[in-house]
Image: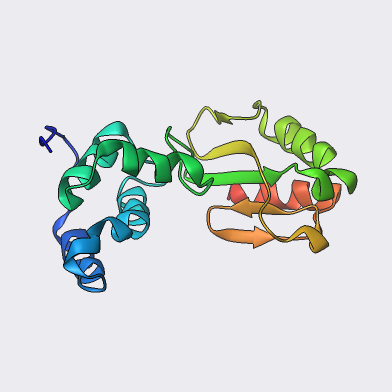
Amino acid sequence: MSKIKTKFKFNNTNLLKAKKILEKYPKNFSSSAVLPLLHLAQEQLDGWLDKSSVEYISNYLNVPLIKVYEVATFYHMFNLKKVGKKCINVCTTTPCWLVGSDSILKRFEKKLNIKTDCITKDGSISLHEIECLGACINGPVIKINNDYHENIKLDDVDKIVKNLKK
C-alpha cells in the first residue's frame, strides 16, 4: 500500500497514547485500532476530523484509506467538518420525535440564531440533528460534546443555551 502525504500528525502526547493503544492489539490486527485512533485525532483537532487526519491514521496503521473512512463515516460521533467548541446534537429518530425533539431542535435554532448543521458566528456552538443516541426511553435526548442530556423540555433549551454562552 502506498503512503499518502498528510499534514496532520499526532502531537507527542497523542503519539504516546497511540502507541499504547496499538499495544492492546495483536500486530496483525492493527486495523482494530481505527476507532480509538480516530477518537484521539478528533480530540487533537478540537472535535472534528479533517481529511489529513484520516489519511494519517490510514498510514499509521498501514490500512487502506477506505477502511478508515468507512469507520469515520459510519459512526455519528465523528465529525468530518468543523464544529463549534460546544457541539449540540439533537436526536430526531422516532422515539425522541414522538416526544417533541423536533420542537427542541427548532428552539435551539431560534435561541442560537443558526440553522441545523451550522456554527454560531463566534464559532463557539454548532447544532446538529443526529440519529439515535441509544437513550430512547428518556427522550428527547441531546448530546453536548460527550455529555448526554435526557428528558429535555423546551424550557431546558433556554437554560442550556444560556449556560453554553457563559
